[in-house]
Image (cartoon, rainbow over the protein chains, first blue to last red):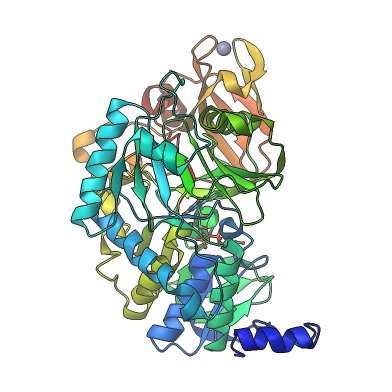
Length: 416
Length: 111
Ligand SMILES: Cc1cc2nc3c(=O)[nH]c(=O)nc-3n(C[C@H](O)[C@H](O)[C@H](O)COP(=O)(O)OP(=O)(O)OC[C@H]3O[C@@H](n4cnc5c(N)ncnc54)[C@H](O)[C@@H]3O)c2cc1C
Ligand SMILES: [Zn+2]
């Protein structure tokens, strides 16, 4: 791999940028691999990277049906934070946040991780009590968190409406200063390039259409580019998890829903942090290009189409204008949807399955972008050792039978 | 916006309805006989198909009655609405209304 540096930028600029090497190869699939990762989103690519880097896997492929990062990885609002309520969840997300903090250097790729802080607003006495409880829980787990009042919110975010007569008055917020945003495409590309340099085959336009299970063991996959055998298969396909599970004769406690986001025309810098409100169902930040990036809630119905309904967009927009009346004149430019994999306890599944050699990493639902490096790191460990790391052991499939759910609905400000 | 046909009120906008999740999940007839895995399946596991899906909707801003809808989850095309049967002759449909009314995990924000 040619390392990127200030010097290489300069040298290539002198060559009119015509001589950059390709960032990753596009090899033909081999007949068999030590490990196959199905799904070339951030989580799948990160899994392959850590398998090669930390566990000595030399023969790994990532199979992606479209282009890498074209799923939820490239469709999300890119908020990164670790202030979840329950210890199991906060430790997993915090592992990820720590990896984010060194990621650009690890990958030699600028993922533009910007720790501009994340505010979770409280609009009622109960919201504020929940916020205080969560902040205290975070601190006990060594995670930075603060409770702040409306005056401090106003000082940090001058264009927000903190009037006590607002329909949903702002009574305060939790603030995680180490939270922020990252450039989602760069995360996929950075992991892909670094994994490729360690020998991982990244195979795009290769859809998995079947999983070969014999006598309780997964032996390989059928794809649109022919059958491929593997010792271990890790499935990391977000909203399509149910489709892949069915190929192996499995069911999952997951339902797929559309989730939408949109961006405005670029405007002058006005918002230098991230604002979320679970109560009014909206979250917003401003991209480096100046676009307001706004996320909505999920559509209530199951859906595999990468689009949702207009009322949901309207609802999110109402919430944003309620918080930022000045944005009412801003025009929206683009809007899209992703398919998110919703778990009953709003927590992911990183787990072995009843089929030997077959592992699932899914259920991240509306909030898995922040977990990309940590999820790949823990899932690589699970595949390599055929058992979970202690960080992801609580996120196994058996929690739905044992009852040890990790209820992050609402608690983590993921809305209710 | 989906145009949903209420069997009693006719075609109405999606915003008049709320979603009740997968249809045809029968409440266990003998709860004590179920293993933990069977309980998990009843409570949490769903078929979540890409394609034809039978689901529950409630016309909560109209006649407030539950009914079934057959919809394609990939194209969102609605094939038909149907009245839930309460005869018990078809265990799956018979208990629709009683079992999952309002259990859809409905709200969640991305972040
Ligand atoms: C609108 C929106 C806003 C969001 N906002 C945030 C946020 O602010 N912060 C946050 O933390 N999270 C957010 N999320 C959630 C986050 O995007 C996801 O949890 C995360 O990106 C999932 O990554 P992934 O790699 O698992 O999935 P994906 O990026 O979806 O990757 C899965 C890949 O699998 C491929 N695939 C599917 N089926 C097959 C097959 N049969 N064969 C081969 N490949 C296949 C797909 O093409 C896809 O590329 C948001 C999501 C959406 C949709
Ligand atoms: Zn009606």
